Length: 90
Image (cartoon, rainbow, N blue to C red; front, side, top):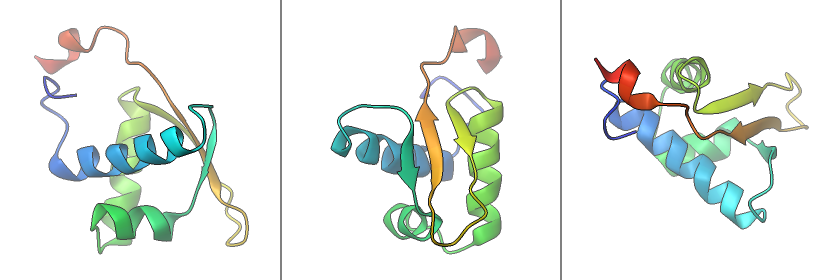
């Protein structure tokens, strides 16, 4: 991620929260997440910023995001190992 010029501090913060949850859940994909929990841990106050960064992490190939649209059921995220990120950091 460090070499990827598209990644901002907000992307990195969200990804580190996702990574922490993934570790706590035994390194198994997918993991269930709560937007509220991720925003609090990542110190993000804007829902717009959160959704933008999650969408971009998905588009950039860092995660698979499966939203639930149900406030009582968390969304699911799978962490991916990006394929050859050096080419996209031009």
